[in-house]
Image (cartoon, rainbow, N blue to C red; front, side, top):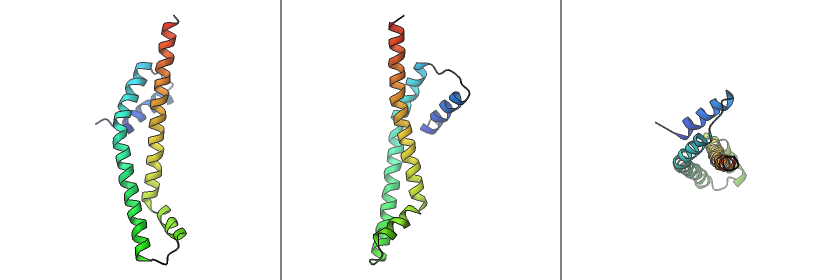
Length: 114
């Protein structure tokens, strides 16, 4: 099964091994990532909702609890870290799509200038 993780891992391996990556491969990978990014954003939304439910539960169970303490409790919840990592992954994917478009455009210009 192809996921954003498998695509990113493969490209990371090629970069670490200093293997040249053809422009067409960049474009193909970015197209797949762009399509699969919907799964990541759906997962992010679900986790953010779960964290909001947790904060709501804390506020309702302890109405006198300060907001700062609720925020601290949320920040120490494992969901908070998962959300942060997922947001980071989504940003990397978006940047990869942007850079691969740029790379493809540069290759097209190089081809025209030959």
